[in-house]
Image 1: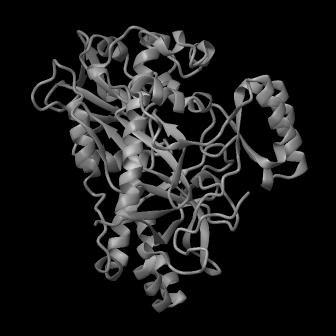
Image 2 (image 1 turned 30 degrees about the horizontal axis):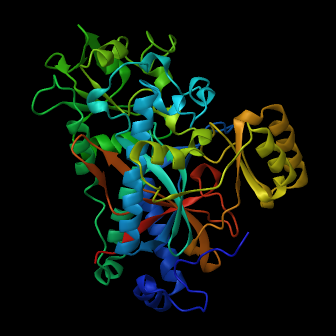
Image 3 (image 1 turned 90 degrees about the vertical axis):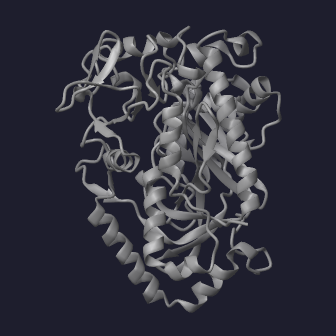
Length: 472
């Protein structure tokens, strides 16, 4: 693995222009002041209840996601290039979903294998031939991006189901403004606070044709025991919409209503944070207590919009990811603006052989995995772990893809030993409405706090930091 690109320091040790004022500030501020501000930030997060639960732990205690107080900085030009690539990506993802649930031209062209669609557990046959409002499947995407050089960004993953983390993007900014006003005064930082306005505008823009001029939007949550419940309640509050559970909604004559103290009120758009399986016990899992009986009937009747649409998970499978350059070219007739990480599809015999030969140097991921689970980082794994994965690959090769170990860029991070570089990724949030694509300048930067670690997921010990895009 080559040396990581340092976003603050050039190879000769000089400070890159975007970080010049931050570097001067870090030189002036004592470490004990930074430590005190970090404790302040943790106190604020805890007081506000910004925690998450890690499933599978013996004791499901609520945890804080560690917050790093040193911002990550991108220039306006860097962001402009990145945003163009993200807009292209979400348009291609939507075109792919529209196609596989209707004409399937990409399958007939032999670009994507049939079984990657029809054997994909996230593919929903119930959506075959069923129109969705305005033909938009993914209104909200979290597209994970990593950087390896000054001008090189790779898409690591497309999150098209119910992407989370935007509350941390917004709260990280609020806390930085509160704790470090002097740092902001020396920079022209583009705002992210408009995200909830943009989200509400996007959701209203995709309301069904039968909706009134001012559509009613609700946010559907699985409830207080969900690990992302804080985010659900936070967003509902910021959006100014009702936070509802399945029991708060009912379907009558193929129309969705919300129970209120003044009687049923029609609902036009549901921003749902409930997985497909649990949305409607009459259509999917009959044992679901989280969904709304008859919701899919109302959806297919065109009387309610679900954001994101049912079946969008068929586009964020990691095996499908490997075809994204071809998908972009097929639907948009354009070269991809953002690179894909080179990917070996273990389902293909020649690819599997090469992966098995090079296992200690590769990253291996489950095609349907998430959160950093079920993943092998070869260069950092012991022999026993590598051999365990070798057996898994031989037993179920179609369940895995492999990629080279990228040298993720590093940013200055305040850790126990002081300010030191740590590897980062970025999750920008892309909104696709009937009128346009909206992307606030920034996103959720996740940071691997352990020295040398490439795993940034909060469930695996990673933290987050504020992402600054400098205005021109």
